[in-house]
Image 1 (cartoon, helix red, strand yellow):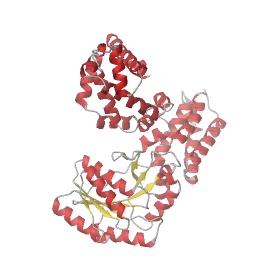
Image 2 (tube, one colour; image 1 turned 90 degrees about the vertical axis):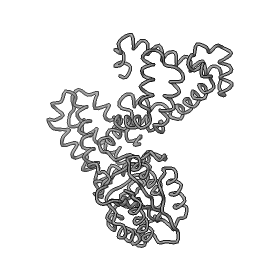
Image 3 (tube, rainbow, N blue to C red; image 1 turned 135 degrees about the horizontal axis):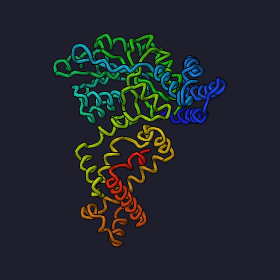
Image 4 (cartoon, rainbow, N blue to C red; image 1 turned 135 degrees about the vertical axis):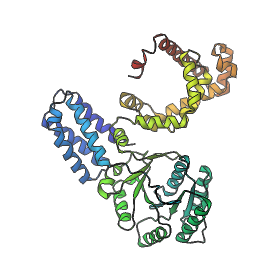
Length: 440
């Protein structure tokens, strides 16, 4: 997410941090680079102009000149102004009598139907009883797609190609009321462009079900055209929030930075991947941290909490600290890490130097190594996993053949495992004093 923009901004900030004092000319030179970086990322020019004016006003004043580290203070100002620009977080509106209706709108190809499935999964995980409504009869594949998504997240889908969307939505609402459902998500028809027919139907659906939230699904990859689409819908329908999809791509993602300021419509969710759990509640401070290369520690923790079995992790940690960590534990840790999502996303969320180092690694290489490690350990017997001392030369040849790798790969894994065990024993003997150095 924002890889190119983050890289450009970090180059500017690194130069600022190296200077003991900052003159007005230094600040202006840095802000010129920031301006170019933002414009290249497709942030709206008027937003860039206003943003940099606010940053400069603070950066050339006493706030920076009296700071112990002027360069770091400028970065702090940029972060604070970026958070203000991104707008306040706007949670989903789930107030009023049940079932609450959430209406999804958007153009074709924006990821609207997938967003409906992701939102259904998210709300179901929060304890809501959810029903999906397939309100796009013009694209039969959309109905099939939503039904498949409904099956995957265990949510019923109301669909009927012979019934017009307003009537179908009303029928679904009635069924949801009688069935004790708490949320109804209505997926509506999209078009290749904004037109009167699309808006008319959308208004008719809204009139039938009175949604608590009407969310516009917008593809972040289309750049500033996303702003035009948001404005077009807002001028015709009461759009209460946005879902920005395909935020895991890096092309022209600057629309997410300027859409709130230009349209006045708050972002409520970010789609950050293809998987059904790749939907994040919008948080300006966390997004700003990621844009500026500071990582997203809170997001990383949340991913870990949702993926890791706490009891199992605790047992593994205790054995690790006692030097009893086995290859079986190692395999469990790998499997739980994979549940956190694509490695490229996890690396993107790492802070500071750790994040910078992670970005030098190709996630595909790491995924490949993960698979190879998993294959090697799975080719061992239970006794071998629990007692690696059993792994003599003939056993290693058998494991290599069984996992489709070379003996050197098995030897390399065992060497890494031994080094990890040795490091943990050293930390235990030192009373964990080495942890600070380990994590920087």
